[in-house]
Image 1 (cartoon, one colour):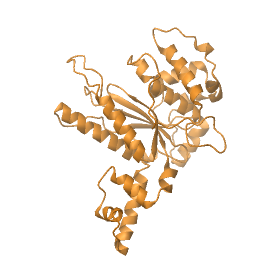
Image 2: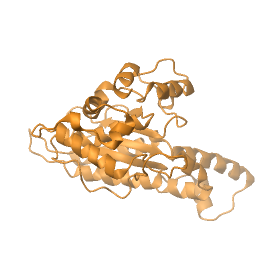
Image 3: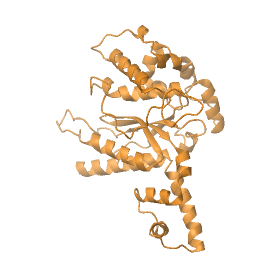
Image 4: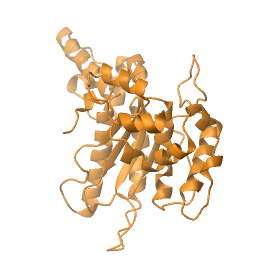
Length: 308
């Protein structure tokens, strides 16, 4: 039974979430159909452009993403503090870039004075928009609806393009975040879409802020150099035509995360296979379940085995 989205997102415990959207059977997101020879590769640009455009408007940052032939992986950071800092006008202007808004929000932006009754309704609307701009569900909805509409128009068909709901996983600590990001960044290598993990990084991606500290600037809690070295070496190991020795993979980031090399390889090649819900060490899991009033801790055995 599917778990309600509000019972999967706890911003008190983590701002980081891994989201997966998968096409219905035989639908192509990008790549080439081996049976017809038709190429859908241009759709990769659709996803990337829409994704990064939404990241500019929403108070949600993209940490990593992979656009595969029939599914997408996104690692997102929800900046709810930013949403709360923005004034009413900024919220309305941002939302109008996505949707038309209401007659009252249009009047407000045009500088027209609102009556007391209108102002009450307007304030309620702004509160709703503020919540939506830091909502993963709304972010994914607007991304997937746009791609589905364009793909169906191009294919001259109607009906579902994506499977039911997108899947989301809470990444509860640094170890879960690093493993998931590496898994996403290395997805194209495992699918033999590319030979190397590096590529042109859009400026809109959430930046690397370095090692965690008390007064931490916004950004990923890793050093860029350490992360790239770790992903590069992992990518060389998991390629079939490369022989690597995982026992020698003793990079600083892996040591700080306290993940054994053997466990790291499994995490970065089978992340979605071994984890089907929130991911994090047992202490992180306990806090997350307590805040969401959930009795069962998903993945607890694999979390203890691979992240402990």
